[in-house]
Image (cartoon, rainbow, N blue to C red; front, side):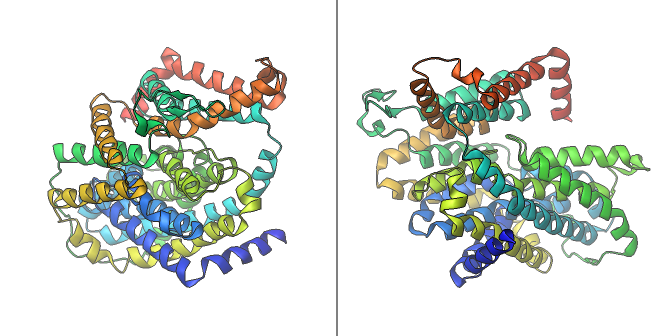
Length: 499
């Protein structure tokens, strides 16, 4: 019965006029940036972080969460209509969704994506409500050695599940940790990695780094290779599914939902890995696998359900453990810190209005997204014709104003520009920047728990191996790293990501 009382509290918070407005604003922006190729939830949330300073914590987190799962909906629209995924997790949807559009079934594909997303989002939110509080209670029993081991496991898992070279991903994590350690020492106050620059005494500004690497870096990359957008259909018809279609999508939606719900919790997994895994499973168990890639409705239903479920269950480790499972969750932790809230298991118990308000807002937001995506499809189709070279000056201007408004310090604007160039260089070197952001967020916490554990044990490193939970997690991290570096596994992994 306690969960129903908590959900009642959540809905009382989420249904206030202010929070409904910010939920609607979040899912609307999420759909918009999902529809527009070249943007995505990471740069958008990074650009909007400064706005959250003036908002109450609940409203700010509800809006940012709406942007994230709203982008999963919007990304499917461009994937289906112009074979250009608006969001990275919609890559798989484009395979069969675009073929359905070419066959005159764009409405059916869009309706399938919306229904699958709504069901998956609702189920995943229920799982968040059920499993997050017990996990938070368990985490309260963790000491510094367990938290250190958990963060090591999270970083290694994000490397193992990231696309591209494992060595490059590890290098990005280390670089992120080093950047996160700049500033004053936590215990002694001694400056480090500041290069005698006074402005770096408090460390590198998180918003400047995030907006530079993911905002400006992404803009430069898109300008280099702006796609020609040919909208497949100008008017979408046939949004109602037949009984035969409903029978075909029921199984993939359920399988995609539960697969995505599980994979979304894993660091580095989330929506992208979920959608790829769902597509592979549906193709293998299908009686007609030859139809996949030629307009199979199951190839839309499964991945769309999986990526939305993965997007929403990725909030579980972020809200209960303070561990981000992907770059968006790292930005959400940044938003919590900006609001003066310490991420971790205490959020559930000490900030029940925040936690349960976000959970309840997800159900409301998922309902809003169904209303936004299907009846307003004509508006989204028109937006696809807007050239990117018109959008990017507005985005750059918004980035500069936003990052300056954080501390009213011009050095932050130059820092953002520098990290914009670094972000572009990383993309050109095939280095995925996501592990860098995770390392930047987790690095200071990793150091703090390491030093706490060493102080408690009076300098004995065996404290990490004599405690069962921390020893198990460190063993799992070592095993994951060894397995992913094996030549046979590495080759298959590279082939899978390339496919």
